[in-house]
Amino acid sequence: MMKDNLTMEWPIAWSVVWVGALAALAVALIWGLAGIAVGAHRVGGSLTHARELGLGALVFSVCGSFFSFVVGAWIANKLAGHRQAEPAIIHGGVVWLVTVPILLVLAALGAGAYFGGWYSGLAGTPSWVASHPVDPNTAAIVSANALGAVAALLIGLVGAVIGGWMACGEPMNPWHTREEQSTTARKATF
Image 1 (tube, rainbow, N blue to C red):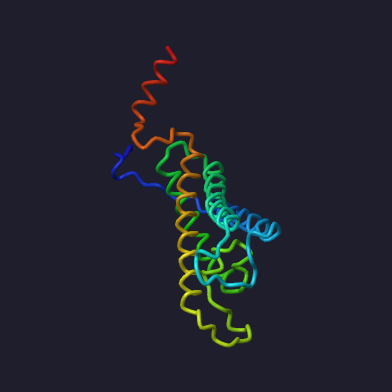
Image 2: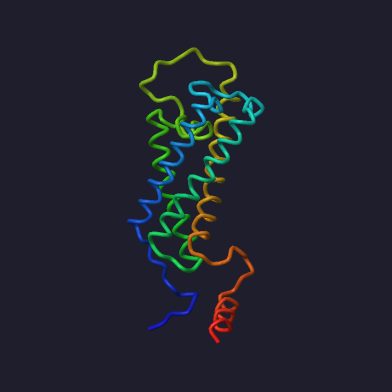
């Protein structure tokens, strides 16, 4: 029995979501470590203001956040074989949703900075790290790190949606309808 578009169910293929989430984490880690290697990211230092973030660090952070989730969502949807944009975008969003708690756990364990400068704001100082004297700029540091983490996560969500949409093969045009595509395909076959 065929359902209309309003009641159509989109089952989530969890195995491909996990593969996509792991791919996103791997790309984010590689990108973050590359940023550290070329000196774009600082490890162990905290920003007190967004102006302290250099252009190289900004480029690495934005591109790393975006492309890691593009790759994760693209891989998940290529494995799932989605041919329509809606289930592909939903799978991209679910890849992002699964990856965020993993990033939180890794940041809580102290590995957040290895994923790029922005992800280090996902967690505070781990409980097993010796406490240092309180910095007078603590509020500014926490604010800058939180702003960076929010930006990284939202840019990653946009990347996941675009990566899922790219993988399905439908034109990336919000005004595209499937009727146009099927009419064009029928004309091409005659």
